[in-house]
Amino acid sequence: MKKILIRIAGCVFTAVLSILGVLLMGRLLNPESTSESMNSIKAFHSMEENSIDVMFFGSSHAWKGIDTRVLRDEYNISSFNYGGNWQRINTTLLFIRDAYRTQTPKVIFVDTYVANEKLQNCNMDGQIYYTRAISDFYGKREFLNDCFGNDWKKYGTYYFPLVMFHDNWAVLNKDSLIPYRSKAGYIESLGYDPSNEIVSIDLSDSGAADVQKDFDAEAIAELDKIVDICNKNGTKLIFYTCPYVGRYEYADAMQKYAEENGCTYVNLFEYVDEIGIDGATDFRDSQHLNDSGAAKVTRFLVDNYM
Image (tube, rainbow, N blue to C red):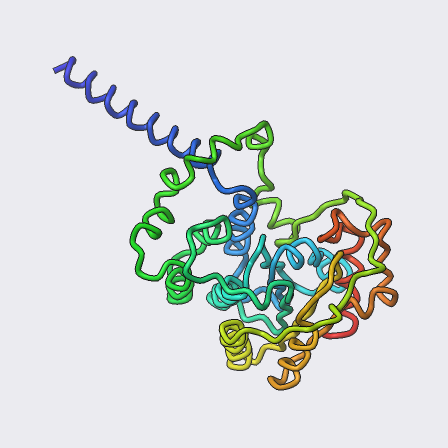
């Protein structure tokens, strides 16, 4: 009897070690820059229900470009930055739908950097992967159907990523072992991804592109869903484009869309001087504002569009 108990205990111990090993390898093999977004999602879902009045959505241009601590500390306004890396327009729609499951924001700001890009019929990537932190509901099922269709193998890699990401061993380095910003960190920063790093950039040749493009029909359909959900909930909707080094090709299309659908569009490239954006002090890299720049943009949007 004693030998049987020892064997059972040994099997249980081995199983526990195996599970822990798989979990650890899964963390190491996650697609790059996804654990931060997953921790931000978990932070959002730890917020008290119906406690947030203002929310921000969009790609890293929103996530790293709007400092929600400013609303809390300087305006006494409850807010959360629910942006994330990449966040194409249907990913943004997913996050907005997810937000309304627990919150009833009065104002929503949506960054437009990738408003014309929809994830569909694709293999799993980091952007899709971090949505695993969002629990199942109709919006998530619609999103995954956009991405995977009826391909069960893609769903398999979504729910069992260790198989999908084994090739990531090739890119492991010391940075893979550095702790990510934690859920607690994102609770403190209200979802904002902070950085006091300074990279000097030149904005002199940035702004609206000389040749403007129209939105694809797929993008318009997603934008329509965002407008519809905000209208149904009585939420003020503001689209905006954050300054970066480059030329934005959809400023005219975004302005036209906003006018036709009763919402607001703010092209912040047009207000760089008024905001006080300084290329020498306000960027963490050529695409993203740092804490100084994010605070300036946040104050401008709050002062002028709320």
